[in-house]
Length: 193
Image 1 (tube, rainbow, N blue to C red):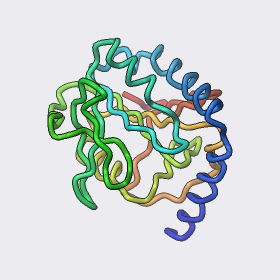
Image 2 (cartoon, helix red, strand yellow):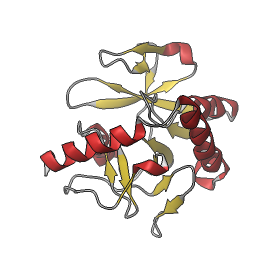
Image 3 (cartoon, rainbow, N blue to C red):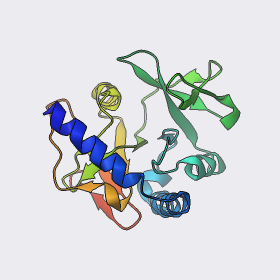
């Protein structure tokens, strides 16, 4: 199955890489305008996100909006081959470039471990299916993190329409999304909350 997933990843990244910078900016803006109007965003004091990389859905405007709305932005930092944690970021100058070239929280950022309230997690991916499956990059970071915090996080996958897939091979440890938002579609599981 992993060979199949690797092939699927290459195909989906190739499709996404065909988008121009202008298309990425405009489609990303449409995605996050929808999310910010929804109760899942409005009712969350904490928003997990990521620093978009290459041709992913661009999260920069979302981060500005989170600050403007007086919410707490939580961004991931890879600590080892197996561990990713999220940290509170209060300003974008608290980010440093990781070995992978992705911006991550620096040492001044506080580890987030207070799961008292439901939090919104914006989840990147290579592809998504309409039965709420996600194809990630293969590191398993989000699946391991969600295993520990599955009851505290509302999972919202973000992608471009070109990233829809008919089916995604799934393993028992893979987590499903609660919502998936693209520039033209919004789907949500009936059993969310």
